[in-house]
Image (cartoon, rainbow, N blue to C red; front, side, top):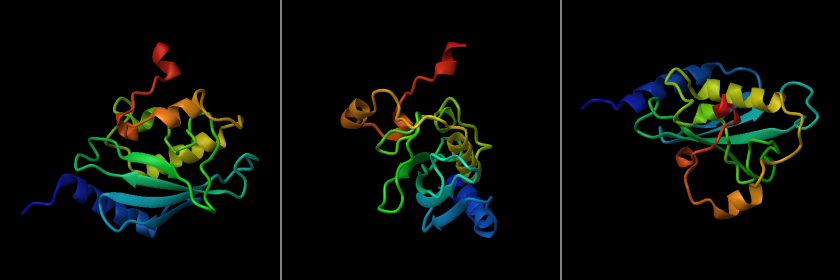
Length: 155
């Protein structure tokens, strides 16, 4: 019996990140190849995120890494969902890297976490995306199925 490609790839990623992760990224759990939890911190002095730790949930399909993982921030008593113009209050992230058009199989769990750290580091606006309340109230789609409109699509 052959091992599905996703499991083989995730096994290699898990082996690598279990031994070394960049500063501010911590593996919380990876009990299977369907869902992993990681914590991230912003390491610079951005006052919006200072001394905060955020929980990410990764969900992998059998088509990973051809298909992007579903990545959302998870709300916990000591882990808020960061306030950011590209992060909805339900934890859904509007980032082209996580969509079908922006994803590349060369990306991995570590690079996604680093991209999210960078996205938070560069933020200066303490606000949610426009239409956050309506989106959260009316959304019934899984994050990977949402077709976000990216402003750079106009170029």
